[in-house]
Length: 88
Image (cartoon, rainbow, N blue to C red; front, side):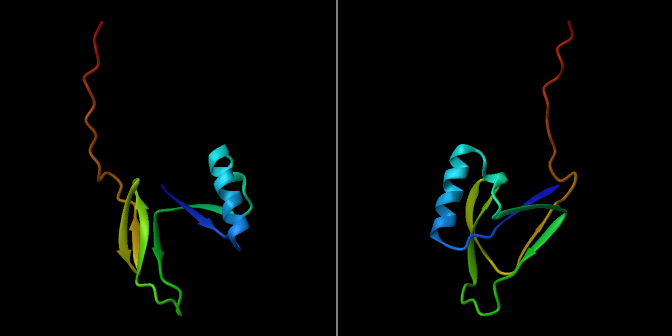
C-alpha cells in the first residue's frame, strides 16, 4: 500500500508548527496533514506553475523528478532473502 500525505499549510506559521509536530512525533494528528492510501498516484504541476521539476524523497533518497510524476506500487517486485531458521 502506498501511503500518501498531503500538507495544506497556509504560511510560515503552519510550517513551523508542523516541524515542531515532526520533532514531537505527533505530525499525523495535525489538521493540515491529510493521509490516504492508494496503489498509484499521479502528481502534476499547477497549471500556472513555471516549475518543471520537483525535489522529492523516494525511499529516503532525494532526487529531482519532472512533472507529471507517476508513483505506482508493484507487488512482488522486491525479492527478500532471509537466513535459514536455526533448528534446535
